[in-house]
Length: 189
Image 1 (cartoon, rainbow, N blue to C red):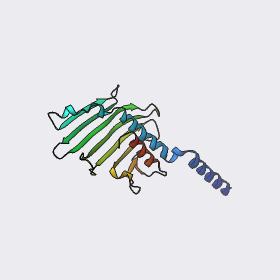
Image 2 (image 1 turned 90 degrees about the vertical axis):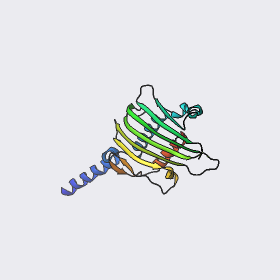
Image 3 (image 1 turned 120 degrees about the vertical axis):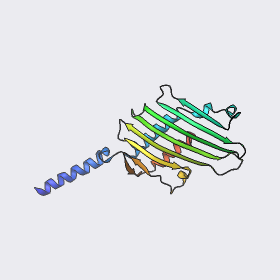
């Protein structure tokens, strides 16, 4: 009898582990989709369309602001150009205010902070970037995502520390690298 109960409990545990991926938290696909939703939302408010050279006539700095139609995503960007040193800096904050991702139905709140900087001299190789994600999600298995990555993300050995639902998360597949490739294809990186 004890053996029968042990077999039934073991079978139930294996069944739950295999068939209920949400039992132990979000899957790689869940996390990747949450990051993708935030990045696609960010790209709906492109700050670059408002950046024109005439903004730099009287100052080396331009402050830009834009929002999507319902103002659930905003972009605040400061662009600075040191004309003497030929050095460009972008500093921005993309904020989410109860943004509903149509694909997943999730609601996103929080911010993506970013900075790009480097020389605009021909052949310069000093480009630097930092992205900091601090987002909360409602409606799915992912409740929060926080991580920072920089220009080293392309190095196969580089693995940013990712917190998902408040705990350290390690991708089991190459989903994160695929997400970074997608971000690059949308001209974020």
